[in-house]
Length: 341
Image 1 (tube, one colour):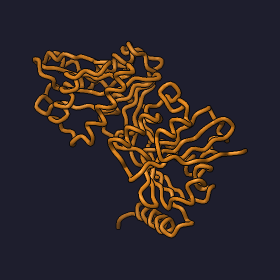
Image 2 (cartoon, helix red, strand yellow; image 1 turned 90 degrees about the vertical axis):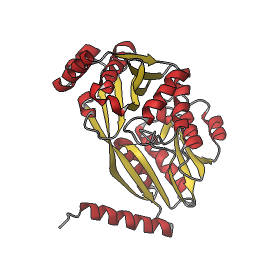
Image 3 (cartoon, helix red, strand yellow; image 1 turned 120 degrees about the vertical axis):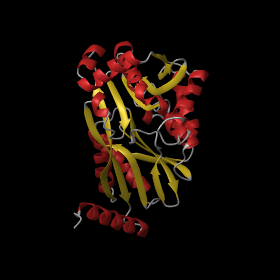
Image 4 (cartoon, helix red, strand yellow; image 1 turned 45 degrees about the horizontal axis):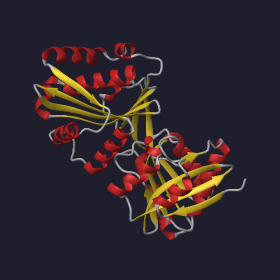
């Protein structure tokens, strides 16, 4: 199999070569699109310069978006990236996909000593480890965080809600009777609603937002595409809870949720969640709802499937720094397996 590999330093150059294969139409996942990587670089740079690698074989491409610093690189991702992986176009076979990963690994071998990729789905992590190992790298994948989701392709909201824990359903019913919380869901960007979102988040239990400019840019673009679902709950005219979702290619993703701390007793977040789930299941008729990363206990009440996101560490033994990094990684792994005495 003939495989071509090349490196880009500029998103415009990559876009010209991709010819639309990395846009919304051709990439089902929000996190696999060129616009997502471009936005990440603009607002949450994880390195000194972009390093975009492409391999091509049998009419299919594989892309790996990295951020390089000195002789090391990280995946071009941020805390907003819920799944990071190589991006494929052209529907490669499994054998071709694996060959493309090997080609990327070989293309990077003269340049880098280390690569770290965060939040990689398990299947893709296995493929990356296998491909880079075959290309002569020392590769390791370790569990990093959980991802919760639910398949609702055969459910309406009534069936979904009936399957939820009785305590959750009871809480929602009781709180709804206690306070007249009103809900609004925006499917396009609205300045007033966004101001409410920012105010609620700042007044919530959540840590300081990493990059409000990133979140706003995402909301504006997804709103323009009709993929935004921004839910705002109000109590006596005051916005008290907010949730930022996207809906695209049959998948709803819960990106952000928050409520003001002084209204916790009314559970506006729970009531807003119920309305949001009902909207995407019955109105948008999605097949899957993804609750992002994090193993918060409450997610199990709404979701059914728990899988892991992995951290993939890649070390190049042809470089001294790579050998040292591999040794340190092995020592950390051994220490993690050694029980405390």
